[in-house]
Length: 171
Image 1 (cartoon, helix red, strand yellow):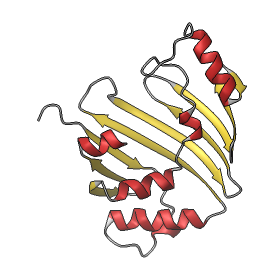
Image 2 (cartoon, one colour):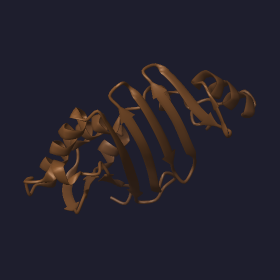
Image 3 (cartoon, helix red, strand yellow):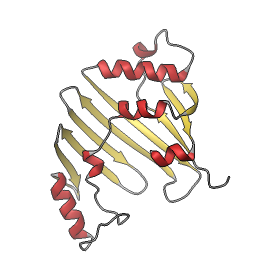
């Protein structure tokens, strides 16, 4: 089917040598073990790369870098062909880098609506507060995706897997 889109996820969890020493030959098992080890750490950083193959408006690559500390602090920077996005959050408090200025989520949403002429409805572009308030840490994302991904392949510290079009739509 020419409309089928496959998303390849690079599990850029920096599978630390200690996390995979004596590891299984199964890349999916290695990702699961690394995820458990990182969940026990006092802090970690990550880089996630999502590459969509098959064209369309969302074709290309997007990446996110971040840091997380057990006390709830996180910093996230995301880049795609369409936009760049950065925020910090600790529990329910958050700040967003919008138009080159740090501001609250509400301020960014207000500023986005104002710059869009009061629009900003679904599909209208602009700032989406849910991208900050509903952000899932990579460990939670990996746990969700492990059961849906297929064709796991490990190359050094990187593991790739594929998702079918239905799983991509959920993602």
